[in-house]
Amino acid sequence: DGGITQSPKYLFRKEGQNVTLSCEQNLNHDAMYWYRQDPGQGLRLIYYSQIVNDFQKGDIAEGYSVSREKKESFPLTVTSAQKNPTAFYLCASSTKQGTGANVLTFGAGSRLTVL
Amino acid sequence: GQQVMQIPQYQHVQEGEDFTTYCNSSTTLSNIQWYKQRPGGHPVFLIQLVKSGEVKKQKRLTFQFGEAKKNSSLHITATQTTDVGTYFCAGKQGGKLIFGQGTELSVKP
Image (cartoon, rainbow over all chains, first blue to last red; front, side):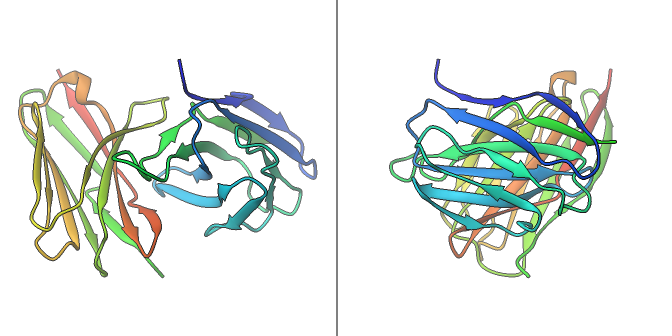
């Protein structure tokens, strides 16, 4: 079955530590996205990538970094510069063509708690 | 900045009652998408509306896109406990998908 796999599902870290969240898709989608979800605030875009080796900042990129070395993978690093990193992180992907263009398929999410 | 406002934030209904959530944008949208997120789950795509005044139905769910392409609604007829979750709209503005804050629906049996 095609889909998006995020890991880990739950992550606990101490303040000041960088953490990397994994996102892998086997849907052959060109575009991948990272969203942050906080209660009552909907989904906010952190970074997105339309093609391998290229990515753009979203609305709340400060304190985060990404890479897109392979089409299937789009890892997100939450750095110590992120002031309030505790949140639910969602990875998504989409195709750019056809009837399903720009429709997002989400992973199950990673819940990060900073102690 | 670009915003899509969604109301209400919460809605509690008795099973069998109807439910509606509304999305409004200050700018024209290319299209609007709707997603459902079950408690503890992730958003799942429901539908996309593209044309001005478009109405689409999925069983008990009716989706509308306003004539000016600035607002949209999702109406559920005769809610069931399986409808519980948060419903998000997402409007396309200038190539970017902007999510509303979501409406959390709870259904009392």
